[in-house]
Image 1 (spheres, rainbow, N blue to C red):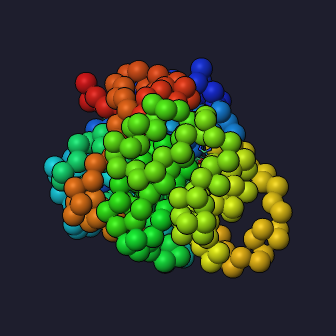
Image 2 (spheres, helix red, strand yellow; image 1 turned 30 degrees about the horizontal axis):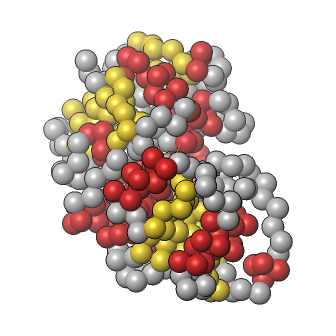
Length: 339
Ligand SMILES: NC(=O)c1ccc[n+]([C@@H]2O[C@H](COP(=O)([O-])OP(=O)(O)OC[C@H]3O[C@@H](n4cnc5c(N)ncnc54)[C@H](OP(=O)(O)O)[C@@H]3O)[C@@H](O)[C@H]2O)c1
């Protein structure tokens, strides 16, 4: 089998293609022949060595992938050779509140990820892939897809007629747009260019605000909601956007804290929050049961993730470069694992 590894250190120059022995499944494990993977913003942070001291080389990167079962351990029930499955982002979070040792169970750091031709996973951590999706489409689901699902389900699910504001046009944002539309919500999105705005409109966003032409998108959201503000914000921006998200949401509304692309340390004027009965709910991807619920919704509504570009396994470092350059619109994926 072949695998990419940050062998001695992080940094793209240290991502090397290696050859190893074929892994053997234990009694409750499954051996997968990997078919596709998808990159997330987090994979860039890991690649740069900025994800904290618990994630160390050697490491096989990437959390999100799809494979075909080629061998099962003797105690495995529910999967058989030929099944298409995805390993969950959090390998041991099955449902309910996150376990105390949540972070220890993450694929793509600290646990080895999916950028390998073959990998063994515990059968309990696997989820069947929706039949209507290609391998690359399905590969976007374990982190980006499940996060979008959690962001629209917690602490209460989005209801028809509500207005949801989604920041940016990354992997989480695009699937959240489709899911929010399927829930009957009105969607407002912010983005960074006229071209991206047009793409978002063509995917069904009801209102798109181009940040390159407006410096006060919170006011635009309020204007578009009769002065009240939106019901829910999917806060993917972080330090530089949180204050505006607070201004854009209605009294009693919900801000779902997800991302930090603009930084980690937000400076907040607390009276903005304290007088308005807001809910700030953080999301950390989601559980295996959330992953299954997401897949049912995708099948029912025939939702397909947006793929920007697919790069072959042998050229995997190019996928990190493409993500860093924010090339294209949609998820950057990797295929041809078995070529
Ligand atoms: N908490 C969790 O469980 C969880 C799970 C997944 C991801 N995340 C986090 O969510 C964020 C997005 O992840 P992703 O994988 O979807 O990223 P991605 O695919 O790399 O997309 C990032 C997007 O951020 C947007 N952006 C950049 N600057 C922005 C700004 N100033 N304001 C608003 N948006 C901005 C860009 O969209 P435009 O150019 O259209 O603005 C870009 O497409 C990251 O911080 C990631 O770590 C958190």
